Image (cartoon, rainbow, N blue to C red; front, side, top):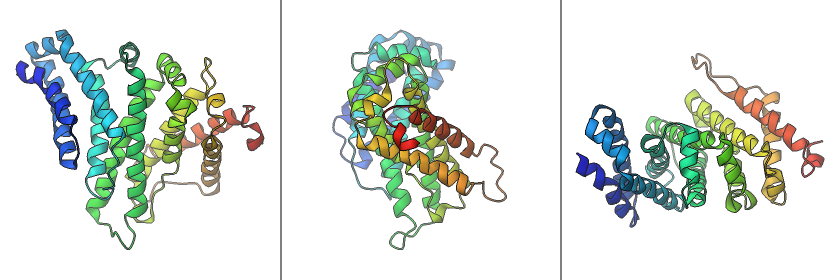
Amino acid sequence: MEKLVSSLPLHLLAVSLDIGRVSDLTYVLRGVRFLHCLSELATRHTKLEQLLLDDVKLSEQVMDLIFFLLSVLSHWKKEDHLGASPFIHSSLVAGSLHLMTSYFSSQWHELVHILLAHPKVDIFMDAAFDSLHEDMRLLSVRLSTLGTKAFPVGPFDSQLTYFICQQCEASLQFLLSLCQQKLFRDRILKNKELCRNGGILSLSFTILKLGVPEWLKGSTDIASSISRQKAKILSILLQLCESESISYLDEVATLPKSMQLGLEVLDLLKIAFGSKQKPAAGSHDKSYPVGSVLISALRLVDVFSDDSNFRSSFI
């Protein structure tokens, strides 16, 4: 068992060097899930637990695997948005991110210190947000394509779409939890690709543009998941905008998408106040998250309207 644990991350890393097909992603996904299983098993296996705690080389290999997988996934541009590829991709992104809480620390402030001490932390940040953005792009294309005359939809398609939403939401929650830590937030604000070049802005725009197509109007689960995702990305934006160290709005003010994002948030409020969304009749989902989106959107509009770069567009 100990030998398997010691060799698995390196094996998966070697396989990841030559990923070219969906079947390769599937194989690596199984390996990542096995790593999660081994981590859970360690709580009931003393020798295994000791190995995970003491083997510095193993920890380095797991971290390298996470960083490399996210880098590969951030550039995965396959157009199989109607097949299994988006589900496997989104599952692998979420699984890779959550390996950190399994193998390093489940305490976010501790995990942030571990990440910031790593020499490639900026590469991790870029890859994490970019790979999630690719997930969201695939989800967006899927939502807009399925259900048309060219691509009729069945019960399986609806269920698979919900599974993809769940994986995207898990990844987004992970990044939100990191962004809630001041040290990580400050490091993001110094990241040129994510801030000045609009990486987070583009991700936000893609998520806020997600809509529930007509063929899924009856699926409260999917509608709720998309709404929660919008609330989470708005929360990340708020965290960045309210930072006292560096002005995020100053960093993105010259980007065309920054104004588009502001208008998108305003449209969100117009739709919400114009035709209030409610859960489908007979739904027992008590956590329908429209309120979270509205609160975050209102706070964000308040921040925009109070900033000299955007004030004229919001008054």
